[in-house]
Image (cartoon, rainbow, N blue to C red; front, side, top):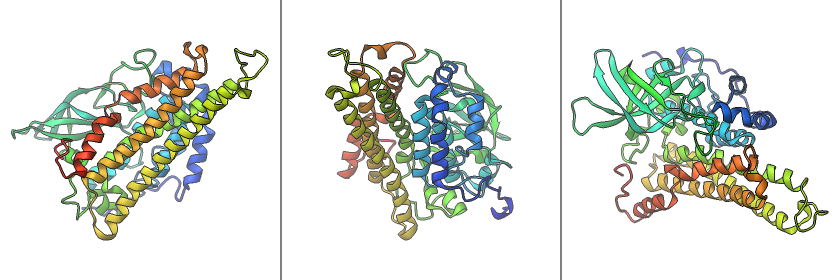
Length: 417
């Protein structure tokens, strides 16, 4: 097999610093803010913003250096996505769910597949739909895949799509796999944007339809790579062996949910920004001569929201660092990341999402009836976080049961673990 060194793609910005990437995201905030109506109506961010994200390197943050990425850590990725989401949570969701899966591919696909997927330029972004909504069948040239997947957030500007599907190869029961397809082998359905959903209208969560697309067999991996048991981790993953970076152990329970929470924490800060604009310009009802900024009721709400957002961001960044620490521990002495480790990281991050939602909801409820009008930004942020509240990954009581079972040494009931 060709050595990695002989096929390395030059990173567009060798040695780019975390601080620089974060600063670039902050610098785009006003542009994202001003384009909110347009992005929501369109259902995703514009081609011009996509080009800005490409130039700024936001799709390459966790991509392996040898394939044209920056190979920076997960805390850096989530901080950048948080800052983008502070400008527009819907756009942040669209970008984050497209940019986060370079880390997945780098962890679990074999070297040949990674070379082909990242390609000669390193241009890569792809959503992953985790529910098995398609079918994969062996054929002479590899696998034929068909299906229709909804809620494929980030698909409008993606280079690839990762679909979860059932492998029908004559074995029973059918096995669940992840299949990656290049743009052009799937159709993006025009079923997102405007008022088709309550919130996250700019998230580009269109459905994807595939009809008998043929992909190589090495572009398909078993779903167990996402929810792997701790046994069998001694040799790592294709990513740890190929890139020598323990981050690419690719335990996905925590990192997947952190992607969602980074957006919701950004929404909390966006709501705080908007509330501050309101209270320094609007007067109170009880005293029309008094600015809301000078009234204790609005001061209290703002202060409480600041505390909630600070706590939520601390949980997000702490959870991201905990994942990195678990990977480093594995690299040092091969201590496996346990089922309980994975689930507790997930539920810890859920608490960050909950606190961020509470910050947005508090401000929406106390800002006044003017916020319910179409186009109001606080209303938009409120609608956006309600979409997170309904996400299957955010159901705290359900996942609390899984953690309790794992801690007590019982089968969790989650994905056969």
